[in-house]
Length: 79
Image 1 (cartoon, rainbow, N blue to C red):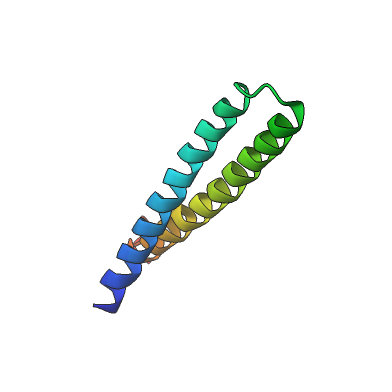
Image 2: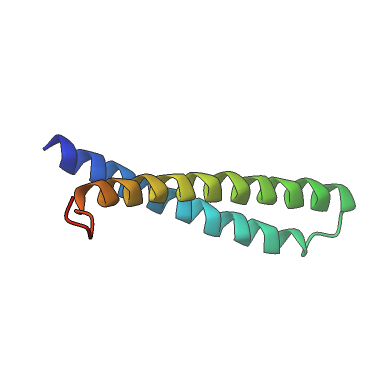
């Protein structure tokens, strides 16, 4: 049960970070519709920070799941 919870937690966290990545991209595109330069700069950098953090988290969660799968699978050498 504990292993199932671990997998479920990592899958949900990877999906949530993917949603925030998509939301950051939408904010990035919305920044170009703004007329005020100050608002544009703030929105542009906020969207980039949002995308950077969510992408790093998603890569980390996927990396952990890949390493867990690699440990479960036996080597091709049979060792």
